[in-house]
Image (cartoon, rainbow, N blue to C red; front, side, top):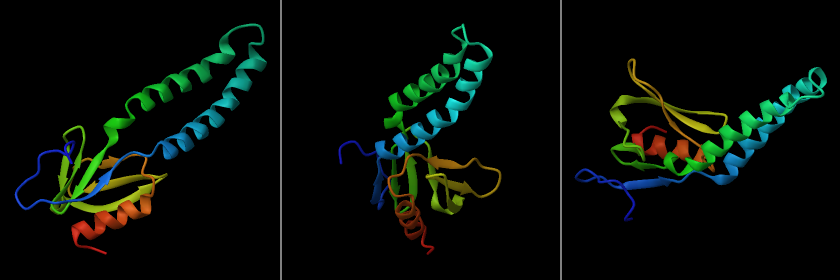
Length: 138
């Protein structure tokens, strides 16, 4: 794996999490469907203006930006920690649990630390199982 981050001694990559385009499409379709309600409301209130396209424009802009940065959500699960492509990592002794929220896997950290989100998992359950087995919990 030439694109893997530098690893510590005795560290082995157990899972290479690549964001799923299929999962992203599901999120995109949901956002567009939710945006249709304000678009219809704007079309009723402002029938002769360009305001009805504003909600769809904002949604499409946000989705375009997220699609463009989709590759930055890659992560590697190792036997010592999880590494995110942006350079952030979480050692297993600092992670209290792994949960799934709307297809996103969130690693809750012990104490007042932030959660680490692994986005657009193709199979979130398999990702959580891999994380739990790497942590040593089942």
